[in-house]
Length: 67
Image (cartoon, rainbow, N blue to C red; front, side, top):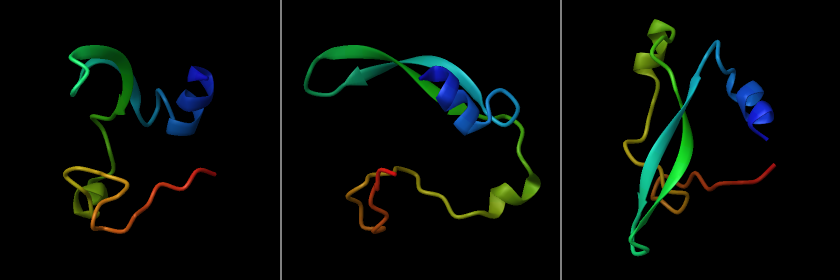
């Protein structure tokens, strides 16, 4: 699965995969997860729209849709 996700995210050329610890609200525990981040990107990306916090049920109307 990680090989598929790495290819999908353009890792390691476009994004880098990093392991992080995530606190689970309400469960009182933590999970080890992977996130894809980038430190290098085309200058025009700075001007693209973004969301400070993405929620599939948010007011933006951008619902998650599995392929």
